[in-house]
Image (tube, rainbow, N blue to C red; front, top):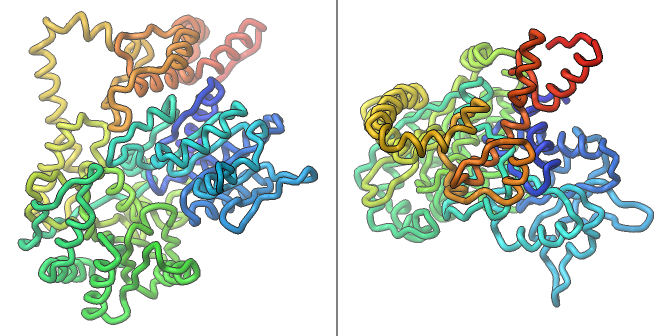
Length: 548
């Protein structure tokens, strides 16, 4: 399978990080092919000939079966599933090189004996955690403790690393090997543009909702969302705005989803179905297939279409509208939900080399974007997430909030807003304000700031916002050791996230001495990694010609 350019970078960066030891994280937005990336990592790992096995962990059946299928295709090796009644063979005659398992299965057992104990940790060289933002949970920690006894490397993959409760994934992963967010995906033409439509519902009032684990309390929210006037105030405009576009509605509870489905079908008979965790597997599969084929216009769901499901777009239209009838304060959850609509139609962009041409291909397709409906009311003290928050990931939090509010204000008076276009203009102003503020304090802070950013400047790497899950976590001793080995100056108060970026850049950037030799021989240092620069210099010393 031919990887996309960013997928190849993700694979290479993750394998380089794991070679340095410890655990690392790959962050890629929904729709960019995380499963293909870790399947390719497994394939390359198997080619190293260590004879050790790979384990993939996830928390839902859909993710388990999806991963097993993709790994079998990409890696071309036997894959067995350990989940519920499905058991991987562990006889002396045969052991599959790759096991895919649910974390619940691994920790199931009685009297201190868990199912993971059937596996010898010394046989496993790599453990991969799908949807790794869940990895701070006790079940994952127990499982990792068992397999780490054999000295395995750990890779986490996720689209949304910032949990609503801000539990630090930094306590599980030593570094972030690669990041490619939803904004980059849109700008590079791998994801469709997001348009936002704000619907004002005067009866909506979240002000009395409590906050639990960083998000709106479920019971409080449900009582607001099931209020009859609110239900009709959201459903009717959704149907009017959508027209014949196929869409997903996210609900706050099973009862809420049932009521939404009932009202939608009252307006447009047999157009909506709903799924939840209690929906039997076969029925759920049938409903998803019918939705993808266009037999149903609306899929109403409660927490089922957020992870592990991708619209097959068998109707050649795809998901073109998402109604957020489940407001949230969690950027991670919001990104998961809107991510169900950002994937282009199959075969729209693959094989196209230029980002501009990919964007043109999307614009000319039957699915030229996805519209997200957010419903506005009295939020009170709560700061609810909107599309701008999902796209403003690289800005400091206070600017992201201000930009989001500006988009909300502008969108309240427009039909559909291209959020990225407005966001880009707003960011220009934010940059100007930051620069003006920096100049004011330049004399006082000059010494400190030059010390802080010197290593970043040396390798042409601009510092940027710490992710919420890693904010302020100091660099690990392993990271500091690696930086010393790579001969990178270590600034004071270096965070784990900054250290990860320095390591990644240092690995992929020639040293100043290497750059000088390459330039002297008419070669562009930016075309080389540290390793390939070393190989090129060795070739030059041997009198061979080097071309890039």
